[in-house]
Each structure stands twice: as C-alpha cells, then as structure tokens.
Image (cartoon, rainbow, N blue to C red; front, side):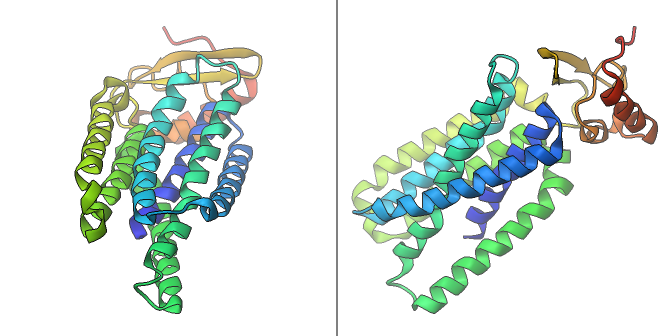
Length: 274
C-alpha cells in the first residue's frame, strides 16, 4: 500500500515540476496540476462503483496501466512539448487520466481486502500506509530522485514499481492461478518497455547531473525552441523559464547564476555565448 501511495504522489509531483519547468509560473502550474489531479482521483473513486466481477483481476490490470501511463508521462510530455500547439491540453489530459486511474486504487483495494480484515482495522491500515507513502514521496522526490535520476527516469522507475506491485498481487493470491500465466506475460512486456525507455539516450541526457542536456525553452511571444546547456556555457545560452532550472545542475548552482536567471526572466533572452 505504501508503494502505491508513493507512486501516486510522485506522478503528481513530476507533473507539477515538469509543468513549472516548461511553462513557467510555478505557483500557477503546481496549483492547477494538483487541483486537476485530486479532482480526477475523486472521479476515479466514484467510477470504482461500476467495476464488478473479479476485483483482483481489475486491480492487476489497473496497476499495469498506471505503471505504463505514469512511467511514460515525463518522457511523453518532454518529447511533445516542442511539437504541439496546445501543450496545456495534453498536460491536463494526461494528468486527468493518471489521476482517475490512481483514484481507482484505494476503493478497489478496500473491496478486495474487506473480507480478510475487520472494517476498522482495514481502513486504519490502508490510510496509514497511504499517508506514510505520501510523506516518503514528498521527502525523496526533491532530495534524492530529481538530483540523481531526473524527472524522466524517476517516472520510469516508479512506473516499473507499479507494474511490480501487479506482479506481487498476482503471485500472492491463489484465485489468480487460472489467468496467472497470461498476466505474467503482460507484466513482463510492460517492464521490458519501461526498461527500454530507461536505456534511451534521451532518458539519460535528461538527468540534472548529465554533462550536457537539452532543455526546451518557452517564451510568451514565440513557439517553443531548444538550446544546449552544458558546463562550458554555464547556463549562458540556456535562457531561463524557472529559477529552479538554474539550481539543478552543479555548473549552474551558484548565487551569481541564479541572479542572472532571474534577470533573464525579467528582461528576455540575451545573445548566446560565443
């Protein structure tokens, strides 16, 4: 349960951080992303009433789907940012879909376990692990995951964890035996797809500690473009759409560079360094 809660909150944090990087105005982006995500979780909880039949099978399908959608969220948004005219529609559509899927998890889990535990014990355990997992996600996301993995690989890692939860659930309950082999194949394919995405050059080049990484730029009066940031330029040719960008990589973490970024946000792009 804690793993599910950690993954769910991390997808929300990844979407909010990514939106603030690409669109600027971090207060607005985090507020709208969190609002859409929580509303979508409510929609997912309401829709769970219509799921019938073998609930454990629904839960396994759901975890595989959450892992694939959540894992692909960051690379998909980064990859399409420079190629779509209505990026916000794509962003909030993906956030809404992911929030709806995550909102289905706890109601399904409660219904699956209701015959195995007393109701008060069940509710206490589920929500305790849910809140503990949320705290864990809030702590490790800014302190460990983003500095060491970046947004793309963080999304892929926790997407794989959701798929692993599906595998553990499949092997832990005897009633899954009739369809166990079929779902194990689906889990293997999902993990393979996420692993291939992890190995892609674009995933490794998106980590904050990479030697040279590509950052999409966006200005209010122009379509998105791209520029190269590297230790050699120390941010001079990167532009600035968020002060956070300047503090992520070691070459751009000095107070002087942060002040330069704030000035660039106010005055517009300066000529690239020669």
